[in-house]
Image (cartoon, rainbow, N blue to C red; front, side):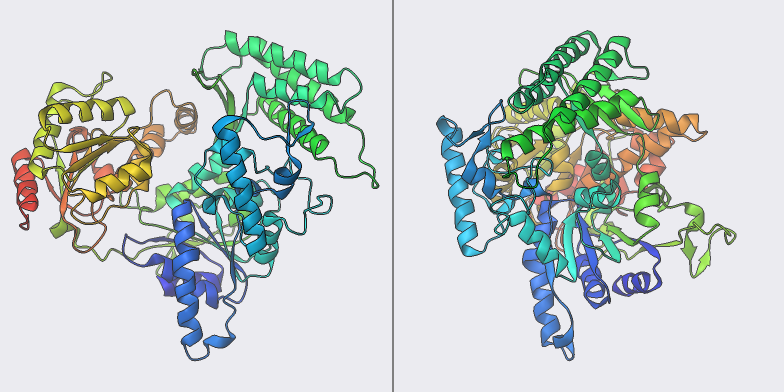
Length: 638
C-alpha cells in the first residue's frame, strides 16, 4: 500500500485503496506523505482517528524517521486543523456573549450552565498560559450548548486584525502552524468547505489522503446542508435592532412570523414542489434579510471592533444566504421540512442532490487524491464508491492500461483501485449466519420469531453480543425481551447512558449485551472476548421517506439507471460491511455475524450485499450458529 500511495503521489494519479482492519494503513500513507516533496493533507471522518494520528501514529513515526540514516534532514513538521468553532474563543470568553439584542453580556448564565461555562473559561485561560491548543476535544466534559458560550463560528469571528486577542487566538495559531507544516491533519468537513465551497481554510497543498473515505460523500453533503427555522430568523432580527436605525430589523421579524405560519401549514417531508405559501415566505425572508444586512452601518477603518455588531450582522447574512438558496428552487438541491419535536421546532433543510460533480470539478481536477478505507469495494467492485466521489469507471487504470479505450478527453481523471487484503483469516475466524427461515422484516418492528431467535443466539453466546438494529424502537424491544428471558445476563440499550460509558461497561463484563442503532454500526471498537456475536436485525436500507436518499434514487431512475441498486443497495452494503466489521478486530477474535433478514439469502440483490462483506464462512443453519457460539463461550475453537 505504501508503494502504491507513493506512486500515486509521484504520478499525480488518483488512488482507491481498500485496506482491512489491522493492515496498518495509517502508516502506509503517512510514510509516503512525509517523503513527498510538497505539502500533504490527511482528512479523516472521525475525531477518534484524528486523535490517533496526531497523538500516537505521527509522533512514533517521526521518532523512527529521525533515528534512521538520513532521516534528520526530512521535514516531519505536522499540524492539526479544524473548523473555527472547534476552538475556544478568547474574545467571547473575556468580553462576553451577545444577548438577543446583540449587546455583549459578560454575566454568566445561571445554574449548572453558568458553572460549566466558568469551568470552560478557566480551562481556556490555562490553555493560553501553557501554550495549549484550546481545542474542544481537550476541554472538560460539556454539552453543545455549553460549548457555544465559549466559541464562535466563522461568521461571528471578528477576524485576527480587528480582534484585541488576535495574537493569542487558538484558531489563528492553529492556522499559522498549519502554514509552517509539511503535513496537515484535518477532517472531511473542513476539506469540503475549503475545496468545494471555495472558502480558504487549509494552506495550499499538493496531495490529499482521505481516510475513512467510505464516509466522504456523507460528510461533504452535511457540510453543504443548510437549515432555516422561524426562531432563528426572529433572533437575527432582534439582534439587529440596536444596530440598524430604520425598520429593516422589524421587517425581518415580520418575515419570521410569515415563515412560522407557512411551516405550520406545510407537511413534513421532501418537497417536489414547494407550497406557494412557503415559497412566498422564503422570498420574504430573503428580501428582508438582504435589506437588513445593507442597513448595517459601514465599518470605518478607525472603528473599534464591535463584536456584538459583527456577530449580529453575521447572523443576518447567514439567514439571507440560506433563504436565497431555498427560494431559488434549484434542481441541484433537495428541500424538505423536518418533523418537529418537543425540544426542536420543525426546520427547513436544503442539501445538494449529488456531490460527485462538485468533488470532481473542484477537488479531483486540481489535486491528487488517495482514498482509503476498510470498505471501498461494494458488491466486490470499486465502481460504486468511485462514481460517488466523482471518478468514472471508464477512467480506471488496471496493470498500467485503461479499462476503456484511451480517452482524448483532456479532462479525464485516471485512477487505480487496489485491495491490499486483510491480515485476518475470515474463513476460519468468523461465521456469517443468515436466518433464512425467518419471515421477511415488516413495518411493525420485530416479530415473535425474530425475538425468539435473538434470545436463543444470545443465550448460546452467554452475552458477548453487539446488537445492531435499524431503529431505536427495535433495539429497545429486543433489550426488553432479553432482560426478561435471560435475567442472568447484563443487557444494555443505547440511551441508557452516554455511549462511552456503555462501551466501557460492555468491555468490562463479557456476559453483557449492548443493543443500539447507527452510531454503534461504525463507531465501536471492541476486540477480544467482549464481542463474539454481532446481531443485525435487518438489511439497513435507507427509510423510504428519507428525503435526500429518496430524491437521489428518483434522480438515478430518471437518468436511466437503477436507483434502487445505485442508492439504496449501495447504502445498505456500506453499512452492512461496517456493521459486520465490528466482529473481527484482531488475529485472536472469533465469532458469528448473525443477519436476521432472510432477504440476504433469497433476494436477487443478496449477492451484491454479500460480496461487500468480509469472506466469512457462511451458513443458514441456526443450529450450526448456536453450536459455534456455545463452543466459543466454553473457551473452545468453533
